[in-house]
Length: 311
Image (tube, rainbow, N blue to C red):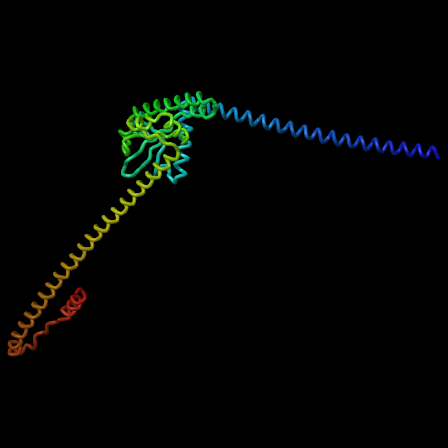
């Protein structure tokens, strides 16, 4: 009896130990799986951080280079134009050599119809403005915004010196496109004299919203001129058609007049011939040579029919 109880106790103890081992193994497996998941998340976050740092370096290079700024600004500029429904080659062109030789090559040229064009530059820098937005120090932000204004003035001076309006004179000036409306507003708020100074240089500062207004106006003007040209072509064609119809009617009237005169002369000719026949007929009867042939008037009848048809 005591041996049986001992065996049962040992079996139960073994089962409990086995269950405990299984539970410990499951806990270990779950812990290892969670550790692997956490490791993968850390690696993914590290990869995202690396990608963001690489993108930041690219933006730093882009903002530091005038070529990079031009490419970045031109990309936003083209996307804004296309979102308005403007079509390249119809409403605008890119990197157009206005003067020949590459001396005047704005980033974009808006077509407003009638051969008139509006030059658009997109190489304004946003690097200092981005720094101003990132800092929490009011003094640093104010200083960065003042530098941002100086950069805009410097670019506007350079743009005005190019003299694009000598070849693209629709507004007798140039548009300086900035890829952010906030950057434009910040510059104008920082320097209240900036707008009047830019206008004196014939440089028109605008962000995507301002360019949307200008682009829509340019597209409307181009479309309006195209419609006016089409209407003028239709009117000219109508005038030419009216003149052609008048000439045709006059030709028909002249032909009818000549035909009527011909028919009248033909009738007089036949009447004279008939009178001559009547005067000769007695002589023929006296001479016994028979009757003189009658004058045929079938042609007269045909002509009368033709005359009636023309009339």
